[in-house]
Image (cartoon, rainbow, N blue to C red; front, side, top):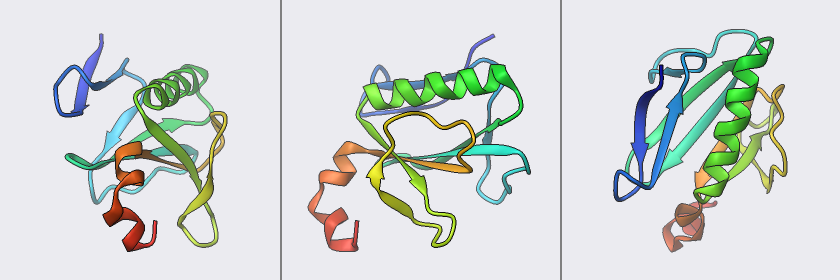
Length: 121
């Protein structure tokens, strides 16, 4: 079964992240369970969505890897989060790392906006 937990973009056909009953979305105040990786997907219209996968479950890793590729194809840029500062690193990720504790996916339009650079991004 495929569900569509959220849809990004200016039109519904732009970006749709489909989960195949493996990964799950975290609500705002939920903590990431131990042994899970996290995508933070930032979109200018829909805010910050959080999606987790179990780092010991090969089917969840495969699904997370596919979502990583799909979001990049749709114009998102992935950054790993620095464990010390808790901030995204300056260098985009070249490949999906299933053991990354947190991956920050930022829409390219946000990165290129004047407001973003003025805020310190």
